[in-house]
Image (cartoon, rainbow, N blue to C red; front, top):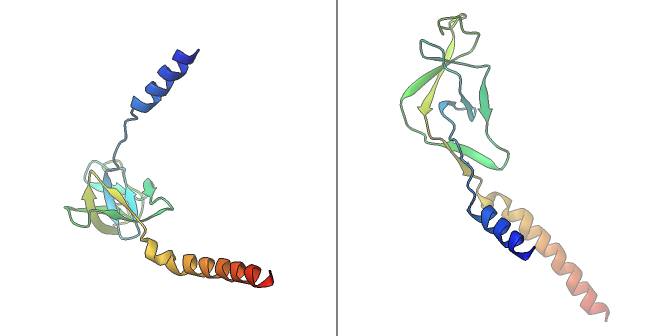
Length: 124
């Protein structure tokens, strides 16, 4: 039984999951639109939102692309005619938020904890 646990642990350690990068058109609203019609416009109906723990996508430069603000016809052109320009990439990476944004919260929590420690020591 011990060998099965060791073998299973080694299997889990060396098992890799294939991760696919998101490709599509990035707009300033931090959404990547992934469905492209035949004539190059991306549909606004299919997009990938940014995960809650992340602040932005990279890269910020690349070839331009267009996301149709309305429905696409069967050829992939905008029916309404309005579109928004974005940046195309086939390997977007999400950027983690900076911890400096939360430093005041951590400092306040440490201060409150310090007050409780000092009050407890003074009572004895």
